[in-house]
Image (cartoon, rainbow, N blue to C red; front, side, top):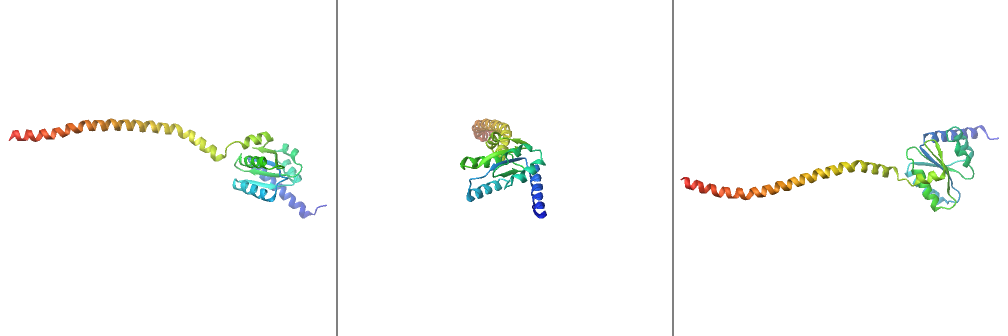
Length: 193
């Protein structure tokens, strides 16, 4: 029978997992067997840079944590080696990085996942992985908002440029008339004397 210290540590781990699952907008559970230390280190670095928390976890502890959340459908995949990747604010980062990694590494596979406290299957995770990143989506939205304003600004600039050409042509037409007028004025002055 485990000691009281070990049981308390496990309870803390479960409590941390429950808190992490509840605070996450998206998560992916993977079977990580078959990858070497160098690949695992590179994967963890990429996930960390994207703001995704990735940990290897015991199936029993994750099952206990899931029982305290709305994600009860995840416990069916908790067999073999298990790691979980969660993100508090990016819906696609974990799915995108892990699906890309699974495509290039045999033995590493996506088991299941969740999105806004709803369990999703592998096909939905793959679809989620194909979405652009948050920054790209924001840039596309801003570009869509900016396009009509830019078109309006170009139209106004074209009118200004056209009026400028008309004004330049009018200035050129007036310039020879003004040049002739001063020549006549001194002649008029001489005849007056």
